[in-house]
Image (cartoon, rainbow, N blue to C red):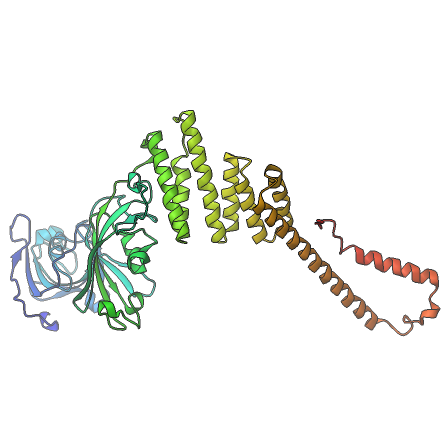
Length: 479
């Protein structure tokens, strides 16, 4: 069987005992060396082809004959013991022969009718890859796990920060990065045709990779890693630098890329319920301040994430004293108002109303909340509601210049809409009248002098009444 495959120049390893006790139960001979130094680990899903024979050469099974890869989770007892031991020593692309004694195969029972009891089996196995995760729908981007860890929850979340000289203010954001946006340290190594063009440690916020020159698809990969894990990323040109390439990195057009990414460090996550009141307030202030930086940089989704963290941090304040509760309410109010500002720019009008209503629950006289509700209502063409709300605002702050200007605009838009509606109805009824005139019989169309004065007057009144109904403008507000 081995003559079906090319071998490389590396010498084959013959009959290596891969059993833990070195009892000769599983002997491995390398037919073709694999690439790299990594091997699959317990729990990895491996992808192989295999051909199984008895010692006399009788073939009893073959995935190649079925033209279908065989996949299984390594070290979980899903296959015979010899496979769990042997495949764990293989490298990507390697082909080997495993000679498996009966007690490491199907034992005394065998697998009738093809495998007799206590039979020694020979398998030729080719390992293609393991733990391949598709990062795109078109197979243009995939990730293979090289090193796995058992940390159940230590994976990045949207808004977490990855290190790269990013902090631009004196606010100590590191005090509470653990709540949601916190630090990660990632090592990235990129290559094309074996030529390394990037090899660095980097920190950055998820959803902000472009600020540090990280390809968007690599963010997707990083989000799937746990602390201490390493993965190899394969990218087609469409997910790399495309038809243009990158002259600065010496990457030609239409180049396929390889990346190796290691999530080296992830700051331990802090839980609000385990924090003292002053710590919660400090963290909430830092979230608000960082959110404002993102807002000013037009990175609205990141800003929104930080602002929403303010309210989440301060959700429970039963153990706060009066002064701390006052500070908490001020921060929560600012956070909700800033959420509304983000949603306005993102044109999510329902979310604006939700955020503003939550702000009004904190302070029912918040003119900023009332103002942003009016902005959302104008965007939704609810001009009269916006105008009426702004009148309530102006009762609280009669000299609020912005509210006056927005109120005037809302009134103008409302009246313009009503005028447009009136014109539309006039045109509609004019069309109906012309259609009626065309459909009248000669007998119905009499000379004007034959119509009595009383009848003409009555007819005019009827027409006037018919026209007045749909043009009713009782909602029109006078300037």
